[in-house]
Length: 145
Image 1 (cartoon, rainbow, N blue to C red):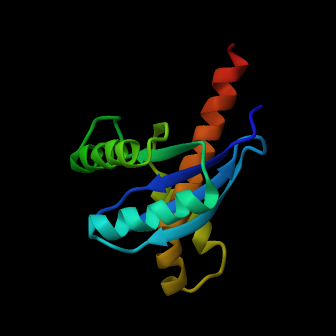
Image 2 (cartoon, rainbow, N blue to C red):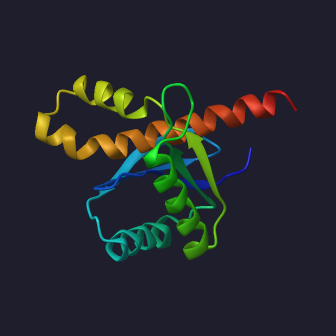
Image 3 (tube, rainbow, N blue to C red):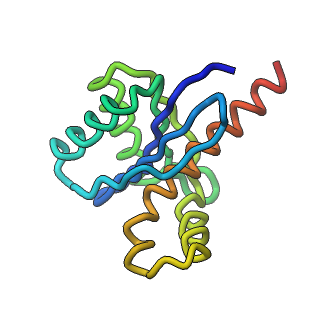
């Protein structure tokens, strides 16, 4: 399997969670939470992470309703995905992120962090789950080829 570093994003209006992972290892870890609403500040922070980690591709969580239909945040996340592609000239893929925030909150509750500590980490943890979902999809796709 290729040896690539990936960055994943859990897009939100107030915060963006970021995770990093290695394709060869098939594992991810929470990296950062970008706590800014202004686009310039967000993309400056993302640009620094891209410069530091040199990812081969970016993965963005695609929020959907429980039944798989789109909602307001779906369009916002898709716009964010297109902006990443345009600004950084990297391949960008989307992955279904239904239930990642719930899963992230559950994982952080079990970590014994205080409520305030886990609140600041939930978005990065959700990004980790998004990236691990992408890894899982790749394994399934490669198993069928």
